[in-house]
Amino acid sequence: MEFNNYLCLKIWEENEMFNDAEVQEILTNITNDDENSVSIVECMLDGKTTDEEIAEFTEIRLNIVRRVLYKLYDAGIASYKRSKDPETQWYTYNWTFEKEKVFEIKDENNEKFSRDINESLEYEEGNMFFICKSNDHRYNFDEASENNFTCGECGEPLEYQDNSAIIDELRELKNNLN
Ligand SMILES: [Zn+2]
Image (tube, rainbow, N blue to C red; front, side):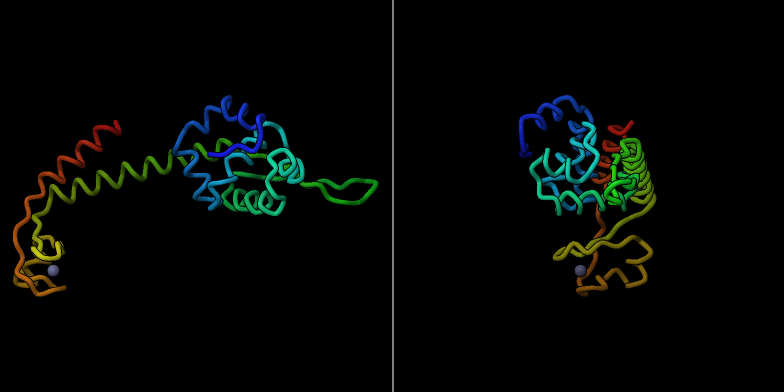
C-alpha cells in the first residue's frame, strides 16, 4: 500500500477499519482500483468532501478520484449532496462515505460464506462420490450410476472416492467461523 503523503499515513494509522483485510478487499472489489481506493476513502473519512479536495489532498488525479467515487456511489457506500453556489451558479458535490454500509456488506459476505460451508458440508456428508482417475472429474452416486460408473466427460471408469478429508476440512472451517 502506497501513501500519497504523510497526512494520509497518519489517518491510516488512526483508522482501525482499514486494518481489516476484508474491508480493503470489499473496497477494491467495488472500485477495481487497489492503488487509490483506500487513500480516497480515508481522506473522505478525514472530512474532505469534494472531489477536488480529495484529489488535492491525496495527489491522485481528479478523474481517478471521480471514477472511484462513482463506483462507491453505485455500490451504495458513498453518497453525495449537491448544492448550488449562489454567486457562480455552479454546483458543488459533497461526498460522504457510508461506513455502516461497508460493515453491512462484510456481514452479508460472512453469512454467505458460512451458508456455503454448511451446504457443502451437508452435501459431502450426504453423498457418495466417484471420480475418474486421470482427470478427477467428480460425480455423486446418482450421476455416476446413471452413466454406469464411467466418466461422462472422458469415458474412463469411475472409482469410489473417500471424501472424509474434504469433510474434515469443511468441519474445521465451520468450527473456525463459530
Ligand atoms: Zn473424466
